[in-house]
Length: 126
Image (tube, rainbow, N blue to C red; front, side):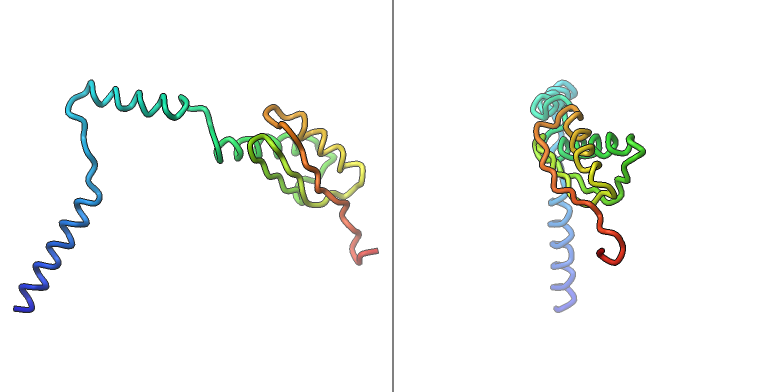
């Protein structure tokens, strides 16, 4: 009796798991292409939005800063949200603070820059 009950429960669990991963299929090829076109139109035809756009802008700012060999970008953090860029971290010279901000402002897509960069203190804090 217990073996039968366990077997029935196992089959029921497998059937439930299988039905959870089932996808509806279009009836014919024309409805499939119409569905794909609707998804592409709704997504904006490949234009990055939201987090993707923020990540792309962040990478562009990092790349622009990295092109300037006089700046060590290893201690600089860049955050981007809807075109607003926030710079934080440390630089080795005080003049680099403004320079990094100017570079970030020159990147296409950046609407504003908040500069929280500080000058790195020498070893020992003096």
